Amino acid sequence: MKCMKQISAMLMSILVLSGCIKVNIGDDTGGGLPGGSDPNETKILTGTIDQSVALRKGTYTLKGYVYVNNGAILTIEKGSIIKSDITEKGALIVERGSKLIAEGTPAEPIVFTSGKAPGERAAGDWGGIILLGKAPTNRPTSPAPIIEGGVNRPFGGTDPADNSGILKYVRIEFSGIAAEPNSEINGLTCGGVGTGTILEYIQVSYGADDAYEFFGGTVNAKNLVAYATYDDDYDFDFGYSGKIQFAVSLRDKPADTDQANGIECDNDGTGTTATPFTRPQLSNLTLIGPYDTTGSSANHGFSNRWRRSTRFALNNSILLGHRMAGFSMESGNTVRDYYTNGESQFKNNVIAVYTKPFNVDSSGARAITSYPANPLSPTDRAAMISEAIGLVRTKAEAEGNTVFNSRDEVLLTDPFNFPAPDFRPKAGSPAASGASFTGLDNFFTPTTYRGAFGSTNWTEGWASFTPKTNVY
Image (cartoon, rainbow, N blue to C red):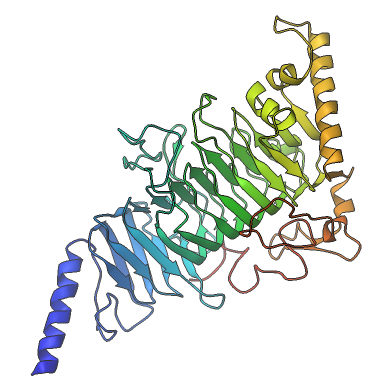
């Protein structure tokens, strides 16, 4: 009788949860967690999750925009597959005060992907994952800013240590709904996410917008992969001040109509000096442009595009093969804070891009040269920019940055093998040494090598570079 009462209570709990999350329960034998005993049985996630729920290992369909709110925790067991509905494209939005615990393993990653069949999947088949926290941004807190992507939810606050959960050994594939122009859902969007959140071993593949975008917040991350993304690989805005180490990006031929960059970074969209300043702290990145540097890849832009009044720290990294430029700064404030004020860092990096290793726009050039602010002739303007680029290059080379004429001189093992890239340095590679961690705090793991990889390929086992044909 006692056992029957426990089973009855368990089933009642599941029924209560199903009012917020539609799940085909099946034959429940797993301790009251939604999902049947058959791991191949498909369950549907839709609506609002306002009570904590754990999903056993299985295959789930994400139907429409699914919100996790009211302090609820959504836990997804390792090895689970979350596919988006085809007609009612899904997105998972974790609101402030709630958490997503998606902790896979190298052998059993958690995969968020398209609901289409192998060979039919494409960028933009569904939305993506949005984490919203209470960490600071440089936007007003009342009213709080609303995250982009058409989900109409606020983000940010005053708690830098806020916790939005765990994403570990997770793949996000074929994301990128454009709700309206310049308002898209990325592979992983973080709005005001705090340092209590764990982001490690995450791969975003074939996203129709950015792979990762950070709107303010303080969250740190390690071991990130951006693969074949249409727009930027890593995008920072609105006062993001977190740290990232060991991140790689590889671009394929398709690209957004705007410049698609390895890094794009602004203090905000209009270049104000609102505080806290956007200042990502980055080390051991490998940012790789497309193998084809002509024709269809013309919109693949910069390795780094430090734009409107932003600050930054990028150290011990590789910038390889981008079409437009390697280290590029735009706006007088951005250039002044790097070249004159010492608020930004660019040290001990390897640069081997298609055209210009360094680039400065005209407003940035005026900040460090003696040319007047009045309109210049085309000849004087070109001379001003050339002088500024020379000044920046001299500073960069004095701070351990190394420039090569060809990407092949960097001697990575097999970076353009799209089914199975290998980003590790070969013997004799200039990236195998030259790193320095002087001045970096203990979040960063010291290495001798520059770039995201030494002798160990940390993508093996859990990441996939063939998501278009994978059978799930």
